[in-house]
Amino acid sequence: MNIEIRRTNNRELEMRRDTLTKRLFSAIADDGAPDFSLEDVREMSASGMMSVEERKLYDELRRVELLLGE
Image 1 (cartoon, one colour):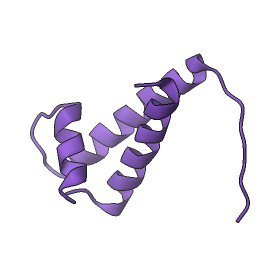
Image 2 (cartoon, rainbow, N blue to C red):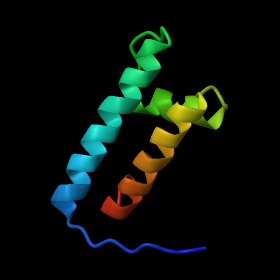
Image 3 (tube, rainbow, N blue to C red):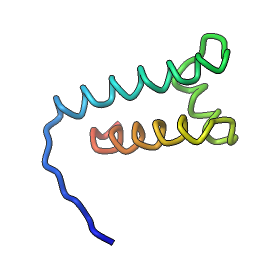
Image 4 (cartoon, rainbow, N blue to C red):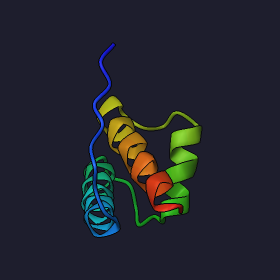
């Protein structure tokens, strides 16, 4: 397994977080979900209610949040 190490800064991570959040909320809204919060998204993830694509977006969002210390 190859590991790729990328250097970044907080500004780039914040921009990535915003982009991923918009994409994730858009993907979930396409499934006909009513208005929801980030906490609702976390619960959906924990309960297995996300599609594979939504889960990939959520996992990447969580990685970015961890790098930001959130």
